[in-house]
Amino acid sequence: MLTEAIAADACEQRAESDESNQTDAHGDAVVWDDGRGPDVVCECCGSGWAIDQSRLDAPVSDDDLSDALDAEGESDETERELTLAERWPTATAAASVGESTTKTRIRNRVEEELKHCDEMPSVASMLGRNMIDPKYAEFVESVMRGEDNSEPESFRRASLDSEWHLEAIVDRDGEEHAPNGGGVDMAPLKLPVQRILDETRLQHSLGRGEMWRCSKCNFGTYSKRAMARDLVNHGIDNPKHAEHALRVEDYYEHNRECMQYPADRLNCE
Image 1 (cartoon, rainbow, N blue to C red):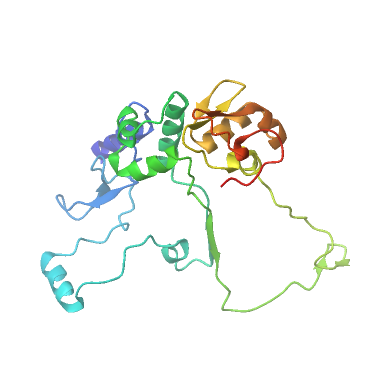
Image 2: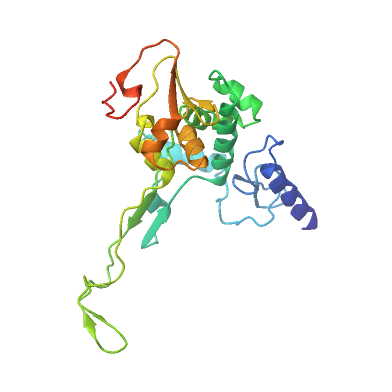
């Protein structure tokens, strides 16, 4: 057990190191290992330390698999990622925000690399420079295009036990209040980076030969999200002020209206 704990600790440290080519944290990816008896182990280090042994079922034998294929035939259903509700069938409600810690580390590496690139590198080059596992090539490509697919997901199932609604709120002194009177007022919140993305020229896609450039620090990038973060890091969270600091380098001098400052931005075709 001590040997496995040491291996697991070393695995975790490799995942956290920028100099390592390991991007999965210990236990993020697991495999079945019956070499020492049935066991679920980390795919990176082979240790079962601190890994939930119920995460995988025992592999199906060749005979069982053959019988199942003969009985069911080939399935026409395309593979798809399970929704949050399907992954948690016993939960009454759940929500997921953001992306995994592994993808966040990769995103930070790619965006930092792009800050120092005058031209957009290839995906293969980006993987090699930052020692990123090739299985994340598609994700790296989306980051390089400035995409962010970490959409929040949530669900709430209706209660089957009873249906009720709030009729009144009674305080400790016995005074009754209407449900819609007082309480906490909810207002929509838009974070600074998202506001800059939605309300400046960053809402448009770059054309051929165009590049975002910050007039404050001369940082250039093809990623609109990286550009928005750079502006916010300068303390610029107002879209009007961000427009003053945002430049669009136009190598081919297309002079598209949607990329010109100031003000009345037109729809970009």
